[in-house]
Length: 356
Image 1 (tube, rainbow, N blue to C red):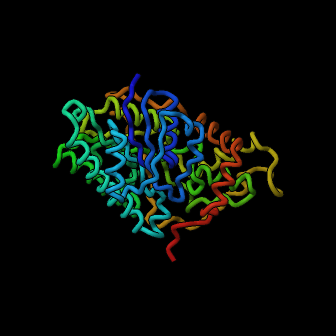
Image 2: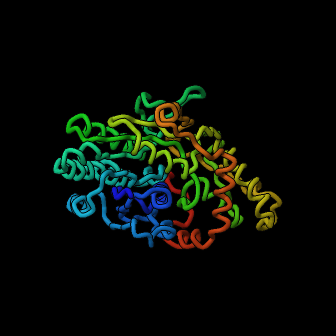
Image 3: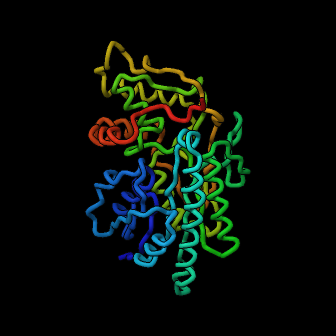
């Protein structure tokens, strides 16, 4: 029986909750979820595992160094997987300060709490400890029509969000080089799947379509993203934690490059099939597509070369774009109450990130 404890920050968020569900269901790890519970943190996403004796929750802000130190001291984790972050580009355009505070300052506070804890461990535990920082492909900026992001791609962030994540990546690397803290960094492509907060494209389109609302597409909808099913990402994160080489970066992608317009049309076609009772006087959900003014500084294309994690660690995604999107639509159709409770809160589906 593996009694090791993993500390997951941001575990009530979309990717964090998927990771925790995966860990509780498929491993023997004890899991401590550290989350501030901001607007996008939702403990309902963890209801399937919340009663498990190997799961514990700590409501803590990662910017609170004393509380972070207490959590390390009390729970004695063998590793930390750091996912807590402000993550929505549009919100970063409206209010960049929160992104600097959480993503840069918060990560630095956590690094110091982890370093202090790690320094006091016995040598064997010290050698086993990991600080796994979970980041984004957006730190690399925008690609042209050709090429892929690799782990050696230069950083060129273009939004306040991606700049804050790039800063946090650099902090993690600096704590490794300067203090010897054993770190791992992963940069992933666009995640989608169950329990995603509906400000993001996929759930927003599904829920708007079902309600007969416009389906907003920025500009021409020709921006290209690589799409990664969230449960595939969770498996990749665990693989990196257990098998990754200290000090290394691993890019995690789904091998699914699609334009935003393709994504929306795919979702509409799935909904036409699964929910043919269309709202209002439309005969196809695609009729709701509305092109809106593009986001300021919108990166044109992201695409990840995931050869390193495949060749060195043996990870490949299990879901195709089609199977993942089908599973995602099914989940939202079957979990309307979860969606309604989220929408009854602070977010009403409004457009964010518009510079007046």
